[in-house]
Image 1 (cartoon, rainbow, N blue to C red):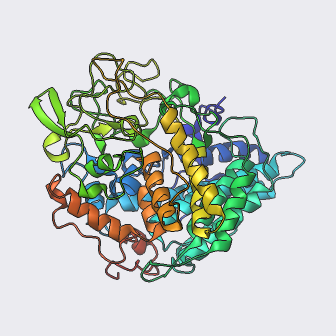
Image 2 (cartoon, rainbow, N blue to C red):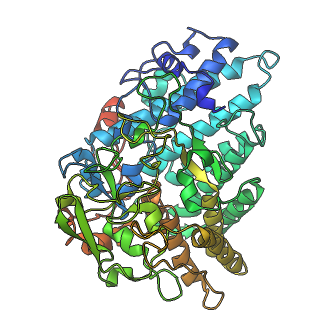
Image 3 (tube, rainbow, N blue to C red):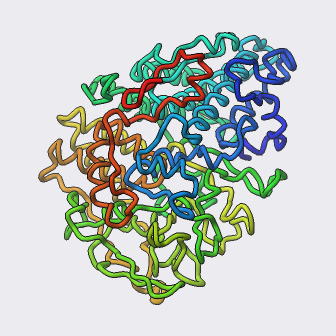
Length: 588
C-alpha cells in the first residue's frame, strides 16, 4: 500500500500544521508541537503531514500548479528544454517572465515557491520536536522516523538552495519566535550543501534498506540523495559571480562510493514504461512522490496537481490547458549522426521536423528524415506521430496557441488518453502516476559524471554507464507510424559510444548531452546548467537559435548573476530588512 493511502484524512492532518502567511514569525496555528497534541500519539499525524507536503498540496498556500513540486517551470521553462505554453504570453505571466529572464523580486510564483518550501520544513521541524521528546519504548520506530524527517527536510532545503542560493536555515531546535532573526547570508551555497549532505548521511545510519510501506524513506534513498547533493557541492562556486571556480575530486569520489552502496535497482526494459502505473514503484524508482486516484479524497484523489495545467490542450482528448511544451531546440538536439551518436553542433543544422499548418485539425512535417534518437518520440508529442497507444488519431493540433508556441506537446508524465488509469473529466489528464525525484538512470549518469570529472581510468567505466542508459533507449520498442504499424514513425538510430576518441572533453560533452536527452522535461535541466557553470553560455545560444521560432525571445538576455532566482521582496519584508539580495539583482 502506498504511504499516502495510510491515512486518507491527510487533509485534516495538513490543517494541524497549517501556517499563516507570516508563519516564520508566528507559531503555526494548531501546531502539534505547540502543545495542542504534544504526545507520542501525534507522531503518526505529524510524520504523515510532512510526507503529504511532498505532493505540493498544502493548506499553507493554494494552487500547487503555480509552485510545482515537479519544477516544470523553475527547471525546464527557465532552461532550453521548454516553452511556457498555455493561452499565450500573458497566460500566467509570472512563468513567462521566468522563460524570458524578466524575473523580479515581486514575482508571485517565486515567492510562493519559497513560502511553500519553508512551510514544509516547518512540518518536518514540528514532527522532529515531538519525536525528539518521545520515549523509544512507546515509539519503537523513533530512530527511523527521525531519520525520515531529516531526509524530507534535506530535500526541501536542497530545493531552496538550488533555487535561491541565499536562504536562512532553521531546524527544530530554534524557537519559532526567533525565525525572524535568522539572516539569509549566514551560510554560502557550498556550506548549505555540505550540511544537507551530512544530514542525509547521518539519517542513512538509522534507516532500513527497505520499509514496510511503499513510499516511506529508506536507507537507499538517503544515500542516493546524499550522492546527488555532493555532486552539486563538488562544483564549487564563487559566491559573487556563481562561476565554478573548482571541481572537488574528493567529493566526486564520494559520489561514486555512495552510489555504489545503493542496491536493488535496475533500468526498466522500456523507456516508455516510465509512464505506466504498473511500473511507478518498480525497479527504476529510487525516490518518488506517491500519488493516488479514487482514494476517497475530493476531485478524483491525491493526483499530481503540479501537472494540473500541463495536459495537452487544443483538440487533444485530454482537453487540458496545454502548458509546458517542448522547445524546438530540444527536438533538434535528438538528431543523431550516421553512427547513431548525438550531433553536438545540432544548432548549426536546420530545424528538424518543421510543422506546416494544413487546417485547424491537421498538420504535416517537413525536414523530418534525419536520423533521430528514439527518445524524441517517447518524450515529445509531434503532429502526425502516434501518441502512446491512443488509437483514434495521431497527435494533431494538440496545442492551444499554435501561433505563439508551435505545434509540439509533451508526451512524458501522461497515461495514454484511452487508458482506464486516466481520470475522466477534471482535473484533465490526471492519474495516480508517481513523480520520480530520483530514478536509477539518474544514479548511473551521476556516477558517470563524477568519474569523467575525476578523469583517468574512470573514463572507461563512465562510457559503459552512459552506454547502459543508451542501450535501454536502443532496445525499447520504437514508436510506429500511425497509418502503418509495421513501420517506424521516424528514422530512429541510436548507437553506443566507442572507446576510440573517448577523451575527457568528449566524454563531458557526451554525458551532458545524455543527461539532457534521458531526463528531458523532468525539472532538472536548468539546475544542471547552473551546476556545470554553463547556464549563461547555453541560454545565450538558445535565445539566438529560437528567436525566429518564438519571437518573444527577441531581446531576451541572461545577465550576470541570474543563475539563481531573486530573494522575494515579501520575504525581505518579513525579515524586517535582514535579508540580502542575490548578486545579479538590484539591492533591496
